[in-house]
Structures are given as structure tokens and as C-alpha cells.
Image (cartoon, rainbow, N blue to C red; front, side, top):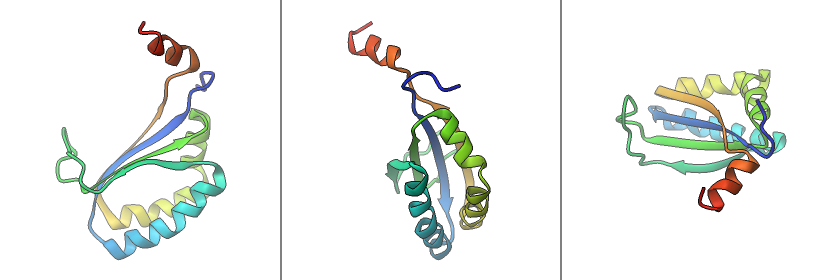
Length: 113
């Protein structure tokens, strides 16, 4: 875990079924993400769901400084409490934590290798 220069990501899709409750989640999770150094990298309210994500009306990628930071953020008591709102406001949710490319992989890709 934590290859040099590799960021960590949360990748999530879901179907929002309670807009008001989801708005409450967003009001809380945004400042919390900023506080811990995470940020929303991409968001789409009309994703093209494929392979068990059909019907999703939300896809989000959150970026963290490292894989370790992404895992610690998810496992933190603060986020576990916030996630209760997300889970209550959505259905068919998916959440994956993954590590991005490290510095050497980025360099190889930039050089066409």
C-alpha cells in the first residue's frame, strides 16, 4: 500500500432515492472531506451504469493523498457516522477504494512505454 506518489480514490455509484436526506449528507461530507484533505475529483448525476450499476443516478470519485489516507478516511468513526445518511438516502450503492498509479508508472506512460 502507498506506492510513492500514488493517490487513493473512492469510487462510488448509487441511486439517490431521498433527495432531502442526500442533501443533508452532502452538507456534512463536503466540509469533512476538506478538513481531512480529500476532495471530490469527479461527479456525474447521469452516469452510464454498466454491469450491476444500471439505473444509478450518481457516480462520484473522491481523491485522497494516498491509499492509506483513503482507507483511513473510510474507516474513521466520523465517516462511518456520515455514511449512515448516505446509505439511508440511496439504494444499490457501490463503493470501491483503489490506489492510483505511482510516479514511475506515470512517467512510463508519459514516455509512451
